[in-house]
Each structure stands twice: as C-alpha cells, then as structure tokens.
Length: 423
Ligand code: FES
Image 1: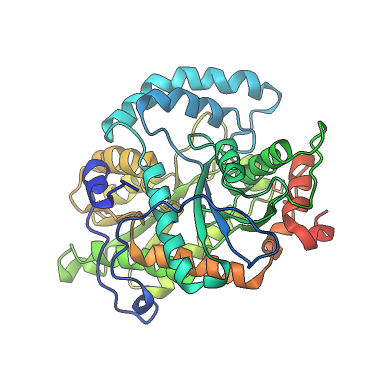
Image 2: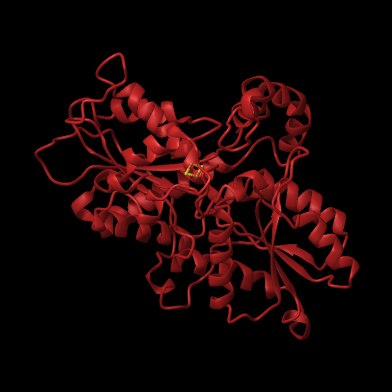
C-alpha cells in the first residue's frame, strides 16, 4: 500500500493533526500508530476449515479521484432514485443534470487538489482496521480489505469480481461483511449501496440465467448497517472538537457555538420515514454528552441540490445568521462523514467559511486516519463477527411509506434468519 496519510493531508486537507495522544479509558486501547498498510494476498476458501478468511467490505458513496471521473460520478449519482428521487424521468433527467453540472463540479474538485481523497482514506481505514482485526479476532482471520463505492471506482461490481477472483464464493463459500461507512442509516445511502450489492450478488453469483443463486457455495453475507452512537466514534468526534476548541482563548472557549453539519435529505425521503435524521441527532447528542454539554450547539444540514424541499436549516444560512447576530466564534463539525471529501474541503472550507468572513469560524478535523476512529471500526467489526447476526433488528423494518419491491427483497436477503420479519 503506497498511501501515505501525512502526505495526503498536505495534499488534500487544511486542518490540524489527528494523530494525537489518548487519555480516556476507551482511548487506552488505541494503537499509537497505524503505520502503512500492507496488501493482504489473495486467499483460497476452504469450506471445511476455520471461520476465516473474512472479507471486510467498506461501502460508501465514493468520489472522483481525478477531474476526468467527475461526469461519470455525477451521472451515476443523479441516476440513483434511492438518493435523488426524480420519478419516471430519472433515467432521462439524471444524465442531463450530470452533463450540465460537470464543468462546475470539475472546477470544485480542481480547487481541492484535483479529486476526492475518499478512496485513499477508505482503503487506508479498511486496511488498518483489518490489521487490528487480525490481532483481536484471530478466529476469523485473515481479514481481507475491500472497498465498494456506489458512484465511483471501485464500483460494487468491481469489488465483487475481485472477491470471486480472490477465492470467495463460486462454490467455495466464505464469509463477507458489508460494513457501511455511513454511521447513520438512510435508505438513500446505505440502503442504496445494499440494493446495489444485492443486485450484483445475484448477477455474479447467479447459477442460472434468471439470476437464481446456488446458496451452497455462494458468499455468506452479513451487514453492519449502522453505528451512530458507538463509543469509539463518539470519542473520535469529541477529541477533534476539543482540539479545535483549544485554539480559542480560554475566556471565550465555553461560548463557542458547535454547529454539527450533515448531508441533507429531500423532504420526500424524510416524510417516507427515513431513519437518518433521528440517527444523526443521536450521534450529536452522544457527542455532546461526552463533552458534558460544554458548549451551545445546533444540528444543520448541507449540500441540497435542485428546487424541491430539503431538510433544513441549511448549514450556510445557519452560519450567516449566527455570525450576523454576533456569534462569530463557531466550530463546524462534519458529523455524518468519516473522511474528507468535497462537502468538507470545498463546501465547508472554501464556501461557507469564506462567506462567513470571520476568523472565529473554524472546522473540526474530519476522522480520516484518526487511530481512535480506526480502532472503533475494528471494535464494531469484532463485535459483529462475534455476535454472528446477519444485520441489526432495525434493518428488518421498512420505512412507513416504502413501496419499493427492491427494498423488500434486498432486506429479506440480508436479514438472513430474520427475513420473516421483513414485510
Ligand atoms: Fe426505506 Fe424502502 S425506502 S425501506
């Protein structure tokens, strides 16, 4: 693995170091350094052997690594009705919107260094997590890292083909864990990634032309579908907030407003009963509890596109309103992303903070290569592997307003022994 996170921060980021020492009891278990990851060699399954090897698949939206990839990324994104519902016109409108927006978005990626760092961070986080898992869960080792993005390389189908090539499935069985990198569940994010994974599973492991899968010898999937209040996640966020608060004079520190910012959702998705707003709020509350509610705070929502109604208040409006009222010391906290990408490096750092034009408006570091965070990922995965559950109980319940047959079938598949609960 050639990725160097320090060099990457110089290239991509503009925020402070995340490699800081630990002090809480949770943090005492955190390795001091992640080091550089090594690529795990291909594995061959032996259905009669031990519980390992285990494929650990990080799912996320992804982003274009170069400006040349922007159009294809946007085209997939706007064609995804799970993320941006455009109704019957989706297949026509999606590519059209993508074409129109490409030059502007290419410029934005150019302004943050030429592309999104999400692939580099995702591969780094997954490989480092697997190293820890090999130590704390030897019974399921070796753990092999994979990344599957919804809208950019490596796409789900590429990841799945690699799994088969590496000796999983194809009659050999083997275990794979789909680990969402959206801590808070939404049908438009994690749900969309699972729909895609289910689709490619049926296509690539289909025994017959109709896509029917021979279950014996196919990959056995389980899902880590949400982890909004995990203690390690909360600790990593809290550490980054505390580090930024320390940059303010002591006599002003307690009055700094913490503005938690998450990607917004169309109100049609919210009103369908999507669990995301409540889960994001749960993360915010857990982080504030860890901070002993030391500062005033609000949750706001960013990155709305198009004319339809989206969940607010908008992050940019919130910052301007507070600054105009005299709250000129604000810390923006990206609370639903696990690494930097355009929403932090461009939208928050170059747009919102620039428009605020106040030196007191700052941003907390993203999680990126934070060892506390990577240790949390390993603990979440370890717990999942030990429990042996196919997914959380919460994933078996569909949204109140869901009418999607695809949601239904996908959930039945991933719910495994709980599939009878999915209605
Ligand atoms: Fe949420 Fe289908 S839209 S379960």
